Length: 504
Image (cartoon, rainbow, N blue to C red):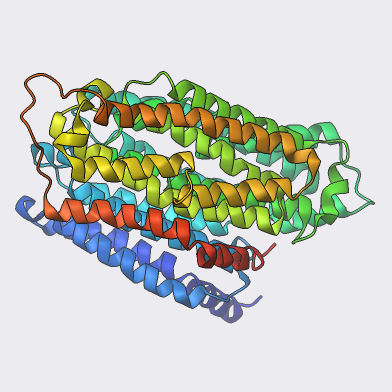
């Protein structure tokens, strides 16, 4: 390729990545504005960040219907990636609004500029993760997300718990990154390429002899990197401490954004390398490796550890952290299936989980700011002191359980049906998932019990008032939790159409 052709190709590639370019420019814009804006106007950076996210969201329409690979196959631009990019940008916008209502973020006159600079880097990394079509790009994008996450978790640098959470997060992250890069190096040594579509071709080639033991080790090590990002067992240990020590808006965002990005990348990795496009013709490649059973075991272990450990938590933030781990186990079932309906159910699950989990974190943050505590014992009688917060909280918790009439029920129903459609072989998996959902009801309703069936704490100051903007935002989360539970078909159809546009 001559220089002119290379120049034209790069420009065309950049044109197809317009949303990513907008986020990158926005990152630099927030940096410049923060440098030259007086401290009294530091919240302007939040407005700039929101504007950038909205602009990127609008520009995503230019990627709709596109099926292409850019930058020499490093990044895929397809409907599958676009679906997740919508989730990332919407979650970033909502997390920013949550940040503006956070007392802990506004304490001691902190400037918001550096916070939103790092947040923009995190969003950019997630967008690259969704489209990464090369093992090197996968590693680079996941590291970009990880580095930004470390900084955000320890953002409250004057608080010991935040610093401790950041250090623990970095240690676990470094270990998982080491496992992943070693696994990638083994895959490269076996196949001679880092492109996941080319790896698929090599593995399909009967003339190429692949040592199954080495390939198994390589896949398991690479799975360590994915498992860390989605907080799947046994790579989940960072989540409870990180969520508890991080600012609540950061914990809320980490529970939905990077998790969705991890699943998007993991699904592309397995579907492209081991199954080709939409048919399981490549399954015979790993006839000596039952990796489906390995993922099923990880799914069961993750949902069980998350739910059982959450039963004993008395801190709402830690309870929601273990809840997030459990939901990662449910979502993993969609990765195991690798059918269009299973993947679409997984994507639908992630979309509705974004709404209700951000909602439950935001409502918990507002209550905790009023009572100065996330401890359950301090939430006694909150249903009568702050009904405008307690009622939406019940809605979110009911949806997390999967009670009919909520979007949580629709998500679990679609996922469980997709599992059962694969035959009796997966019946046990669906049964364990249902049992775990029942277990989760105990700790979710422990919060409801504390709010409505316990007397308020002594010396309580009476009713709690909530500002009108905060109330409006709470119901921005609560209303879709009900509406999408009754009218879920359009979102599911969009997810199903996006799966069929995945570029392998």
